[in-house]
Length: 181
Image (tube, rainbow, N blue to C red; front, side, top):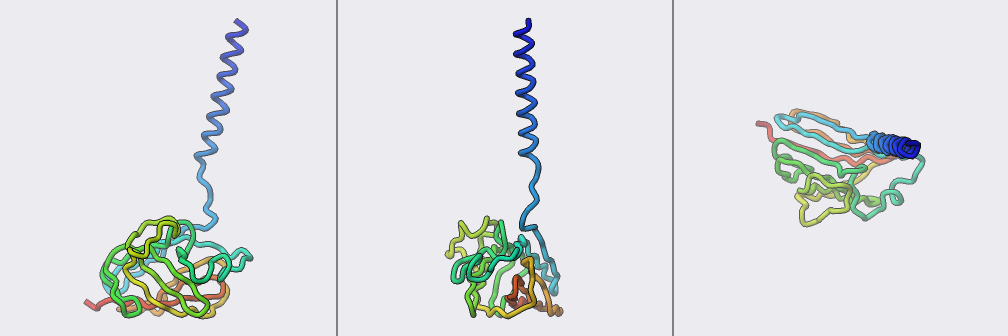
């Protein structure tokens, strides 16, 4: 009888420990790079940017954490995603309505911005240049220090906005235009 009680007690303890471990595994973790989204209506076009916001955290960003001349997801975690409800012009070049992953190739004096047709990607690990819908060259400018990566929409008019990627002491602007009607 004692042996049976001992076995039952041991099984009870085992189930209790396994249940606690499973409960710990299921608790959500706080993201080190929090998710963010920016939305703006331009004319009749809905523009949405989904991204994660890495922090500088006393690191050297440009040329080290984010190497020059290599593809970068323009955020953290999942690739940054742009969604447009109608066709738009990015720095004067046509981009069809839809959802796109957004990548960049940063350089010291010039950046390449990339809108890729595979909208939902984790990082840039599966990036395929053959799926690019649009590539444009832009020029970064010095900016006030920005601890957390931010996408901002400025210079809003009825048919255009400037979209800015801002992080550390750089701002990378480009213009989005829509047809008026």
